[in-house]
Image 1 (cartoon, rainbow, N blue to C red):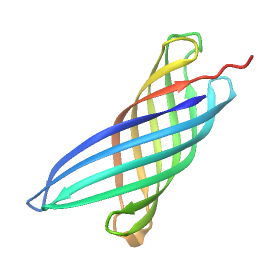
Image 2 (cartoon, one colour):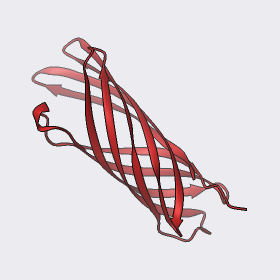
Image 3 (cartoon, rainbow, N blue to C red):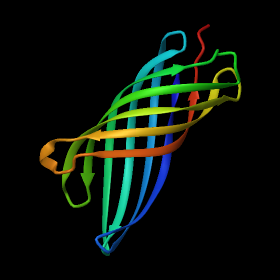
Length: 159
């Protein structure tokens, strides 16, 4: 299977009496192979761009990530609508416009329906829960993120 997903998110919050606004764009192409019926394993690359404005200061961060995923489809492949769950591990490298860089990682859990246009092409509507892990010296400990995304997968068929 070949495909990917993406999402855009907007942030607005007040932190220490300052307004914080942010926008993040994420694109994640992937490739996988069905190792047994309904279970696929594969690899995913992720690119993200994040812009935050805090106290009249703009900051832009980009990251590139990669890692494996496991995906399970619950219903028969004959159905036009199926349900899937996925677990993925990602390793990130961040670049800041201020010249700094950092490494991080995450464990992601995703689930949702996939609606097939035909026997091979489906659009996915996934809820994603991501737990970030980083080194204790960075001072940031518990980062968790919930997001909704849309994706497209093409299931290549054997002849």
